[in-house]
Length: 125
View 1 (cartoon, rainbow, N blue to C red):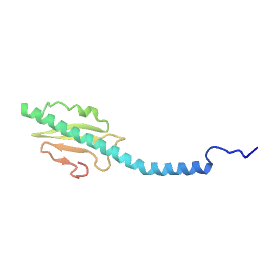
View 2: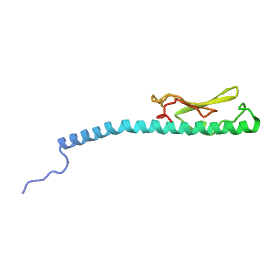
View 3: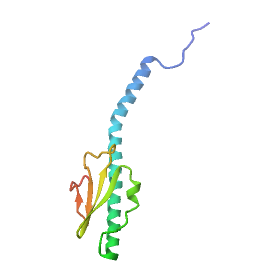
View 4: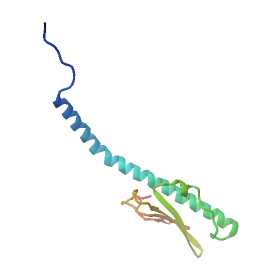
């Protein structure tokens, strides 16, 4: 009878592998979260522009922003709540992050009838 060989991993190999996986997750997870926040922000920006286009088309027909329909994208976005603030002779379309999807870097996004964006930080737009 010869020596029997055992197959499998040693405890040390398993611990080292778990440590490597933990380090990779610790590095990748914050980057992934930032990517998700940025993706949600881009969706909200596209919806703001779409809603502004709906408002402008309505204005060209009736010369008033009152009574303009809501863009379909406002119901499709889960991370932001989109609403229109009408003022005499103008509007501001605002996308506010909902709880659980906070965008700490930019906060609420806005777009008015003159094309002014808020916040003015170019990293948010």
